[in-house]
Amino acid sequence: MPKVQLFIPCFVDQLYPQTGMNMVKVLEKLGCEVNYNNKQTCCGQPAFNAGYWEETKAVAQKFLHDFDGDGYIVGPSGSCTGFVRNYYSKMLENSAEHLLSNKVRSNMYEFTEFLTDVLKIDDVGAVLPGKATYHDACGALRECSIKAGPRRLLQNVKGLELVEMKECETCCGFGGTFAVKYEPISLGMAQTKVQSALETGAQYMITTDVSCMMHMQGYISKNNLPIQTMHIADVLANGWE
Image 1 (cartoon, rainbow, N blue to C red):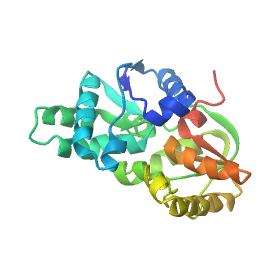
Image 2: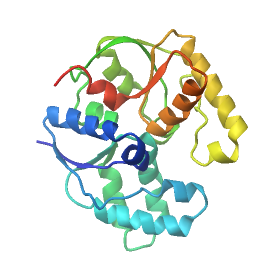
Image 3: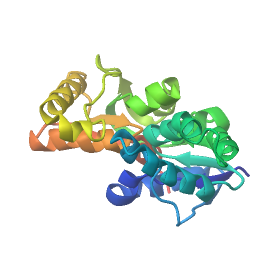
Image 4: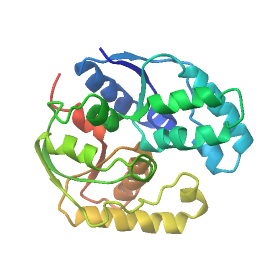
């Protein structure tokens, strides 16, 4: 039975808790032993992106000790996963935590990546009637090289027709503080992304990161557009008890 240390990112914890619960639902159905350390906090990415690098080191050190146990570390976010993998070792180089950062990095997986690359599963028995398109979140695609796995999982969801949009790899415009500092550009990018999805005729725009979902759903809801964002964990937990 694979042991999984559950990592719940800030956006999931505060805004989309059902996504975290659905991830657990899928992992347990697939035979994983899931554990949650309730002392865990942020991975530190927001502070790092805002330029507070020294403060980020303190957050990173806490993260490493929160997840220094045995088993895989799995989270529903390519963005957070990519940050831990690609930046912790650099930040903590020549420190007491450097070796620990390498251990945590090797154990860290984004949710869909864990399903397809570790458990070697492409079909979890999910059901979702309708038509969907997939958005390649920047963190998953560019930081973790996740591309084909989520699509294979979605192609095996019963009743779901998966179609590609032209702008599948284009950023949605969120980018954390980017959306605040450069609001007009951010909104323009969301408009381009959503329009590309609408052109496919899809009912759902599915992704690995709730930050992208939040940003695009805000644009969709404000403009009353006929499409809905979904996290892939919510899709994969749908249609079975």
